Length: 144
Length: 309
Image (cartoon, rainbow over all chains, first blue to last red; front, side, top):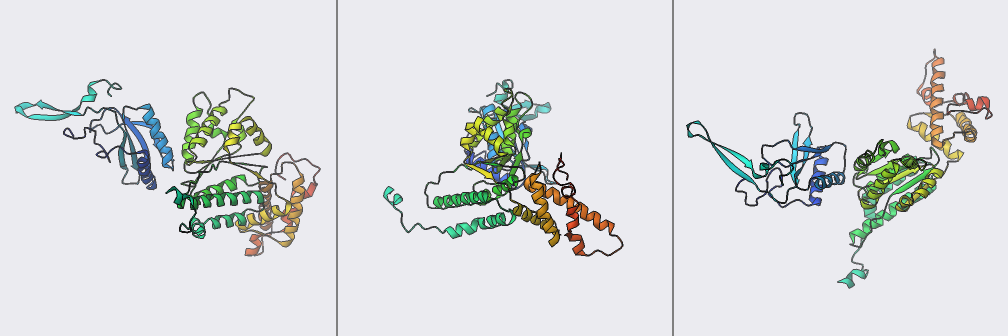
């Protein structure tokens, strides 16, 4: 992550690829809908890999049948949070599965400062490592 | 290059029959013919739309420009003339011809579109529009959206959003407005933007008595009933009388009349306990089931407040 040559956040699907076009996003959403997965949109400005739960943008779209409608919502989210990370998730509610089946980033801030490695010395000169996102040095909503 | 494009050549052939069969459109049109009695102007228009979409599909195969025609429609007609039924079929037809992607129908009224306080309407309308994307949005009694007597009414806001989506996202959804003829005319008069964005104004004619009897037979056949020959005669008499009375709602009145006839038939069979009933007994509606109707009992002079005669 730290030595990621592209300098871009790599989480979820397709994150090593160039940004998906709207058409490609539609195609992915179509795939999710074809499997009866509930699609939802989430955003955050804290890209730490262990920040699993991002903020929901609107409600999960259980009753929508067409990718065009969800893309409309994606664009709405981009308009509201142009400098946040926004991802599209697809939730598989099959009994016994009940977990996200897809998750990919559809919007990222113009400038992604990346992560620093923090070394903390413990007892007996033991070293503990942790990640720190440079962006989170600033308070929420001023990060990007 | 441009020369080759513009001269029609025999090399570029398309098989209209193949596309026609593939879309299985004949199947839908046949069903339309079989299950919907009368409505000739409506059927003609649907056939025309189907032909246009089919030809556009062929043109696209040969890389000719096929303008995306606007398919928004307005259905006007008296109550019970089959507006909703045809709208359902329309979704199916448009789906088979590849005009809409999913082919589902979302039926809404004013309540589903217009909010109750400031700022409530836009998200509500947008929610409905999103649900209808890829299919057909059917707005029943659309004239209620616009209430000129109340200038603070939120209906206008809803219309504005509708217009915007109808214009910009033509590929994503088809809007069908329905309502009674005179009120819809008034609605379009006060919303010229709406009227001009609707390509197909289809008027549903009233049924004549013969068609109504035929409809009744279809309805009965659907639920495994039939009329005896005698009952059929009585029924056509009933239809003629009923048409002259107030609150006549075409096919809907027929459905109600048949429901009551079934009620009386059940009662008649129940009272004839003691003998074995055959399958035919259970299926047949006799003349007496119809003759007990209030229409025959009192003639037409007594006013009927409701539809329960």
